[in-house]
Length: 312
Picture 1 (cartoon, rainbow, N blue to C red):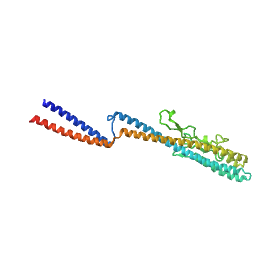
Picture 2 (cartoon, one colour):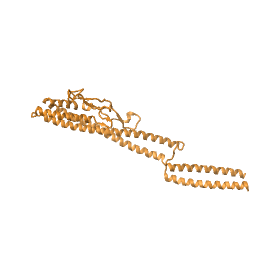
Picture 3 (cartoon, rainbow, N blue to C red):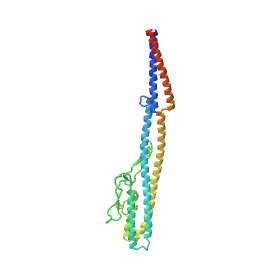
Picture 4 (cartoon, rainbow, N blue to C red):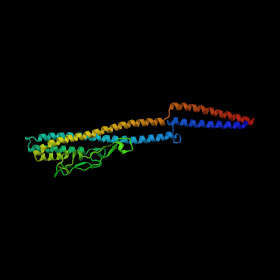
């Protein structure tokens, strides 16, 4: 009877020793990694929550990155239109001066050369790149949106080479596109500046500038005079379009700010779910070390007592 009781006690002590060893290993691993779990088997519920949070963070980071790129693109387009607007203001001033009766044909030919350089500046600005992508080509970002056709036969004529497709950036954290708040971040340049090859009599800046240059070269005072009002309207239209782009950019930056705050909250939640309380775990580690030491001592005592009973 004594032997049976001794064996049962010994088995219990051994089991207690194994549990203490396992607990000590688990706590030691938590202290080393700073995490409550490393594999799904360690904490299935927490691991599931960790996967959900990481998935949210991954999607959020992608949206933030796209929104930042979209915001940068919108800011640059707004700035370019502002610069084009200043060139149009200068062109209007030239038109007012050249419409004066005191101007000679020679004066106006010189003015034509000046306005041709202004038109070239407008086209150069409209062909600006962001990185390797043209800004005003719609989604045909590898193609310069504008080019001069034939400077000799058709001086000042500019053709549009882009498309009219819009690229969008997601503003909301939702799998449903209707709720995601998509924001357009590309522009078809001819919708702002026109296409003097396709529409030579249009009222957009490029056709107006082309006719103004040609009128100066041919000393055509009536067309020069009409250019004053046309350029005035162009200045207003370009300014309004720049304001629209600025409004989009501000909305995009609001989105970035909101998602960055959400990102911080998700990281905090992940930390609460995964990270251990180091002081508490260190205390638990010391407790488990003491328990293991006691269990080891008890095992030695029982083994010694068992040996004494068996061999006395």
